[in-house]
Image (cartoon, rainbow, N blue to C red; front, side, top):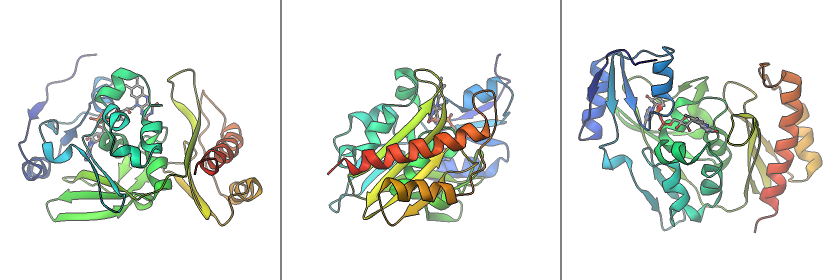
Length: 267
Ligand SMILES: Cc1cc2nc3c(=O)[nH]c(=O)nc-3n(C[C@H](O)[C@H](O)[C@H](O)COP(=O)(O)OP(=O)(O)OC[C@H]3O[C@@H](n4cnc5c(N)ncnc54)[C@H](O)[C@@H]3O)c2cc1C
């Protein structure tokens, strides 16, 4: 289906982008367009104006701090993460980006677009929650930071509100991480996924089982402790043509155990 007519602006600075987004209620940021253009074609979203972030160098680049923190600009693509020496300081970042869709999507889709769309089947929301990432947001009121576990508010809803932009994500140092998923076919949508970070205990973030990633913390990284945490969790997965809620609950335990085992296997 063709897009309906829409205004288009390509700002030269983050400040200008924020102003354009704040001035017009129906304006939306355009990143890689891999979700937004498709939902516009399907008429599931119908913004009046697109504010294209692709000219903003301030939102690009990956930086490795002296303390090992990896900071990723919101407009960095998955392929750039995969090829980045700086991002290799936290290897799971490239490993998970390499699992997203196909090379065309990975060349256009951005880290910022992935987390800001907060589709519950996306790979990066649970990953950023398990890693304890910090989200940097700029809006008309200035800059603020939000922990990843407070950033995801609901399906397609995040703490980056109207008129605000996610500018970058800071990921603290670490190496003992894992990610496991069950997807529909090769390169398909996840039915369930889990990201885990191990450091004494485990932080396990589950995707596809609720509107936002579900974070479980365990003191032990033993399989029994992970299974017990899952059984105690109040998961509310959807039932759809791909999987029933009960099957997703079952798979959530499977992928959580696999993600923690993967993380434990790394030194
Ligand atoms: C065929 C196909 C298969 C896919 N499979 C997967 C998959 O397996 N796993 C997965 O995780 N994803 C998958 N995706 C989604 C893909 O990863 C998208 O790239 C991603 O969800 C959105 O990123 P984008 O850069 O394209 O953002 P866009 O589509 O441009 O934007 C998405 C939303 O985020 C907002 N936004 C973007 N950037 C910012 C910002 N900096 N600040 C505030 N708001 C912003 C936009 O306004 C919009 O509402 C798939 C997409 C396609 C087309």
